[in-house]
Image (cartoon, rainbow, N blue to C red; front, side, top):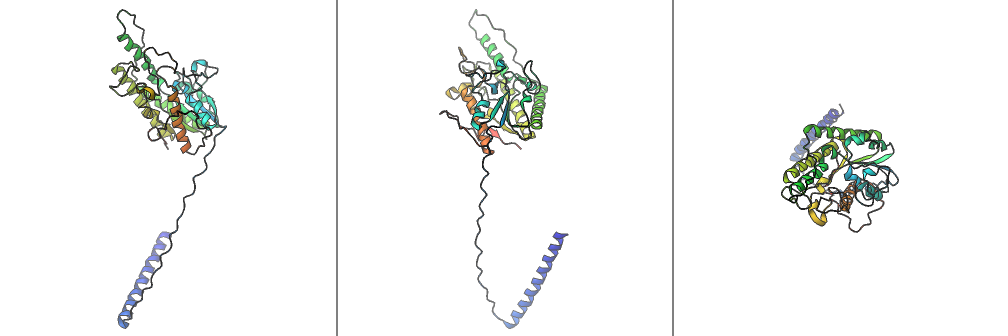
Length: 344
C-alpha cells in the first residue's frame, strides 16, 4: 500500500505540475513576456571513502588439529617427530608443523602414514580415531585424505616394482609385486561419502574452526613425459593419473557443497613433479635412491614448504594474522591463482 500510495501522490503531483505549466504557457503567450533562466550551480561531488579493512585476527596459542595420511605426515623427511606412534612417520618438517609455526598455533598432529578415511572416523589398531582430537576449542583443521582408500600412492610402489621386473638384468630374480589396482565407481562414491562425513563431524565438534581440505600433490608428469625418476609403465601411469584426477574432483566437490576451503596442491604441483629436477616437490623412485630426502613417491622438503605456503596465503587473505614468517631463504612462491579456492 505504501508503494502505490506514494506512486499515486507522485502521479497527482505530475499532473498538477503539468497543468500549471500549461497555464503558464498560455499566460506567457498572451503577454509575450520573456522567460529568464537562472544558471544552476552544480552541487559539489562528495567522495565517500571505503572503510579500512578489519585488523587481522591472531590465532596465536589457539588449537590446530592436523589430520590425514602420509602426504601430511611426511614419512622419512628428517628430522622425525617424536611421538607415541612411530609407524605414523611424522616429520618435524611436515606442512602442519610449518603452518603451526607461522601462525603461532598449538598443533595436535594426528596425521599418520597409511591412514584412510576410516582411520579419521574410527580407530586403527592401537591408534585412536584422528577426529577425537577435534574439540570445541579447535580453531583450525587441515585434512589430506582419500588417497589410500583408492591405492593412489600404493599403486606407484606396485607399478615401480613391475617396471623394474620387466627391465631387470637377464638372470636376475624378479621381485614379488602387488597388483596395480583400478578403483571402481563404488570406491570413489565411498570416499566422497566418508569425506563428507569427516567435514560434517569436524563442524559439529568444532563450530568455530576453519576447515581446510588439502589436495594431494601430483606425483607424475603428463603423458609422454615420464623420466628416470618415475619408473612406471605408461599404462600404469594412466591408472594413477585417473585416480588423482577423480580424487581431486571429489575433494573439490565436498569443499564446494560443505562450504570449506580447498587448497589445490594437485594443480599447484603440476610443474614440480619428480621429473622437474631442482624444482621438484616430490620424490619419485630414482635408481639407487637412499631415502635421504624422504620416502620415495612422497613430498620432499620443498613440497612441504610449498604446501604450508599456499595454505598460509589463503589464511592470511581470509584475515588471519601471520605471527612468524618463514626464515628460510628459499621459501617457495605461493601459487595463489591456481592452487586454492575459497568455497562457500
